[in-house]
Structures are given as C-alpha cells and as structure tokens.
Length: 348
Image (cartoon, rainbow, N blue to C red; front, side, top):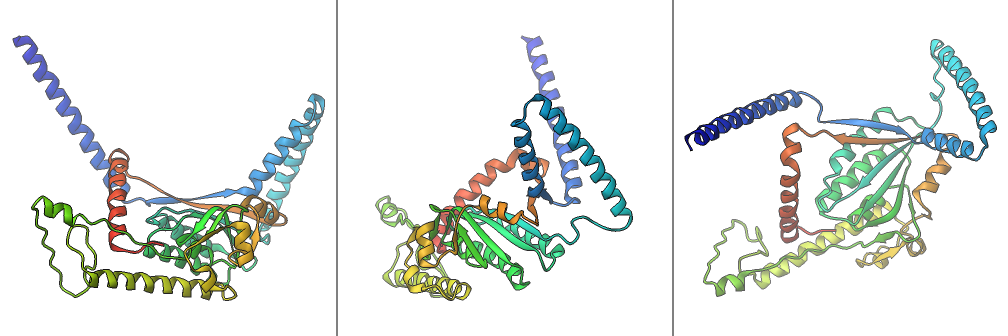
C-alpha cells in the first residue's frame, strides 16, 4: 500500500509539472501572437478556377491519344506564356494591369451580425486597390438580426457606394429584414427564383417570469435613473406605460428602416412592401424589391467575360488559448446575447 501511495504521489508530481509547462508555453505563445496581426486576407482568383475546371472537363472528354496531344500542346502553350510574361515583366507591363476586376465578397450573416468585423476589413482592402473600371459583387445570405449590427453592415457597403463603385448584391437563399437592409445598398440586386426577400419589419419579444417568482415568494428589485431606462423586464412587473413605450420604440425603428430602404430604392412603393412580409425572388421582382432573377453562379460567369473575378476573404486568427476554450465560451456568450437582445433591443 505504501508503494502504491508513493507511486500515486509521483504521478501527481509529474502531472503537475506537465500542466505547469503547458500553461507557461501557452502564455508565451499568446504573448507572441498578440504582436501579430489577428487576421489575414485571402484572395482567390475565381476566373482561374473556372478556367482550370473548364480545361479539366474538356480533357476528360478526350480519349487517351488525344489527351496526350492536348497535354503536349498545353505544355508548349504555358512555356510560351511564361516567356512572354517574363519579357513583359522586364518592360514593366502587367498582363492584367488594365483588365477590369470584379471583387467578390461573401457575407453569411448571423443574428448578431458579428461577421461585420470581417466585412469591414474586406471593404477596406477593396477600397485600397480599386480602379474606376472595377466593380463589387456581394454574395449575401442573412435572415436578419440585431438592428445595430446590420446597420453597421449596411454602412460598410455604403462605403463602397460613396466611392461610386458599382455594387451588385447576389442572393441565392435569403436576404430578409436586416439582410435586405444590406441588399438595398447595392446598385443592383439579383435574386434566385426561390430566395426569400423582404420582411421589412421590426420585432422584439421578451418572456416575463414575474408571476412565477411571486408564487415562489421571490422579490425582484429594479432601480433605474430615467423614466424609460427600462421599459419591459424579464423578472420585474411590467406596466402598461412601459409596454406602450416599448411599442413606440419599435415603430420608430420601423420608420427608420423604411426611410433607409426608400432612400436606397426611391422607386419602390415602400408602404406596400414594408409590412413585415417576405416574398420569393420571382415575386420580389414584380414588387421592385430586386432587379433581376438569377443565381450568383450565372452572374459571375457572365462577369468573367473580359474581366478578372477575385474573391476576397478576411480570415480571423485565433490564439492558441482561444482554440482550447473559445468554442464553448463563444457558444455560451451567443446564447446569453440572444436572450439579452430579444429582451432589450428590437430585431430586424
């Protein structure tokens, strides 16, 4: 028994040393990573990807001898192109220098619109290099969410519009409520036939546990400075005056939403479409909510003719410690935020 006890103490000491080493190493790595950029831009040439796919499909349809001849011809072609590119580089000539570019941004929004942090970096990157002949396509997917989050996301796209950069919004699945607020910033909206569009409205809901707590003889004290610092609460007793103020705030937010959409799309009959309803792409076209029915794939294929299509993505870097603890903490934070937002702020 004494041997087992000593062995157990030995294992405990080893485990303590190992944990200490891991914690120290993690701390050092985190200190090092703080000095580095927290994210990176990734540029993907969609035109080249499509060209490669097209070539692969063409080769697959050839028989064995034809494939050999094709590969031989391609090898010769690439050699000549490389030689020409080298010559042009010496002369300071870039093949795609005068070629119009299409910058493709992707936004798949969640309820809290936290993706706006990446969007702002992508927009800034495009603004840093854009030329007068360039344009932007945003592949947008969002059912909406918190007002301030989607208001900021729309403002990021407004930065492009303010610089007179043509913006096309492509919606394959859904751009509703806050998602449509973003979409209407574009000069043109292209929607898939069954994509969900519209839902220009505002909603807020909050559960109230006051009667349950009273039955359990639990008192809730809420102290505020300012008549309308808190209108409706989760735990306290709500008043009719608080409910009325809450509704007024919702209507005011809805009015701002309608004014924004009407400003972006002045020909739209805003009172007819600002009922909180949504429509599918084909129906949205009839009501003027979108300008064209089609998929983002067809749109980009058309734009590839005579242009270079580039996808811009900003990828967040996570610290080593965040990789171990981030997922669980992030999930908990998101859950808490959902409940808080539903009870405190309107959603669109």
